[in-house]
Length: 99
Image 1 (cartoon, one colour):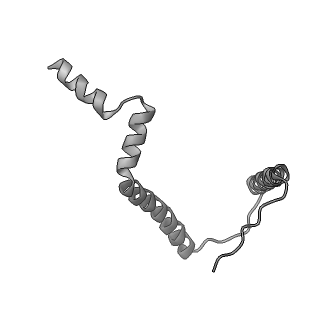
Image 2: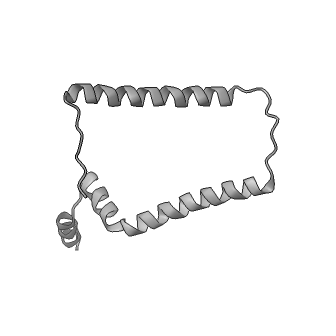
Image 3: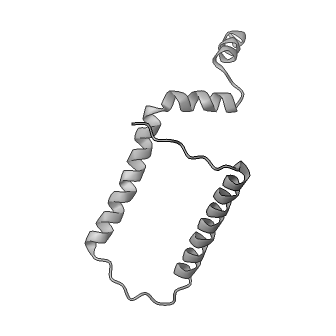
């Protein structure tokens, strides 16, 4: 089943809508952060289950990042070589020049 793609009639209006949406989300995130950081007293209780859950989320994020890095390792290495200005052909020449 193919669903039609609805594009804005005026591309500029669409771009302005997206920019406004992102700006409003940024303002909301800033407001929530400021309100949370400036609260004076929190009458809350964190039970051991909550701490365990937070630890699980942190470990899952770290391990997920490591798995993603492992899956895309070759692409990451090639990207870094390209960014640093090295490629496999010049590295091969450099090794032979020194010997």
